[in-house]
Length: 368
Image 1 (cartoon, rainbow, N blue to C red):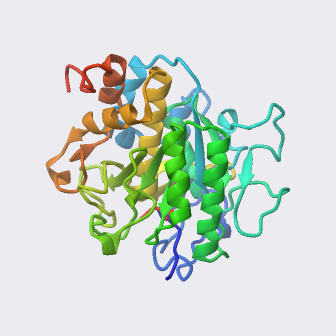
Image 2: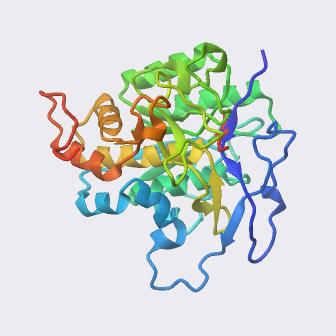
């Protein structure tokens, strides 16, 4: 069996303002054509952006955040607790200005080598989960843009020199650590076509421990309801997994995105999303990885707003509050796009007795 664990993002290059970063070039052979370009680098930090909100400087632009009604959600939000998200990815640039205050450490003493754990192939106890690729930092920036007070735990699993089996084993180790760390949410913007009994078991434990997992549907342009096209961990069908596909700014499913009314739960923006990348830069990436991060951010927002919600209730609220779209009918379970404002209102009014979440108004990374 051939094992793949890839990121679900397409990295594009349009402009570079100061210098080219060859380390961001994606090797076509390694990614089997899934990363045919480079990161689209937009600007350095801090530039001449004094007086501007950092949301405008670093986070997704108004078109993508507007699609999920994020501004309206912010007006209603009232944080009641901290939320920790484990980002199982390529690492995080913990020194990035947009993410410095969001780094979560599992011990009381924070240091340069204590901002997460590197489980990737050939890593050791002294290896820092730094991000040479850019994907993990980009995904983390999106999550932070949705919930600015989120705590991010970097669990690096990916090594481009590793085999698919080795990356899968690293994923499983990272999942185990996330459970031991008692995180609230696991964001996994990656996956592959191979199931793993060990991975399934550890995700089942996460379900029992009340940990939500948000996973990318993948970018193979396939119906993953069909067994031959299944994409894991998204296709395990566990109650604690929200599987996310991606749409463009016209609410159409991205041509690369996987779909399935049984296996995929909801869609979110995933086309040329702006976010943080290493070395104080911002860049754009496309794919279900980015869409997954949007859903993770909203899930964290709901947990912080209403600490009494179970993970099943958070999932129900997110799906039930999705904005319906004819273009997404038959593509995902909810038939719609993530709506942060509607989900937040629903979380505020959620009645466990009625089970009604509607408001009165109603393995590689997954980039294309």
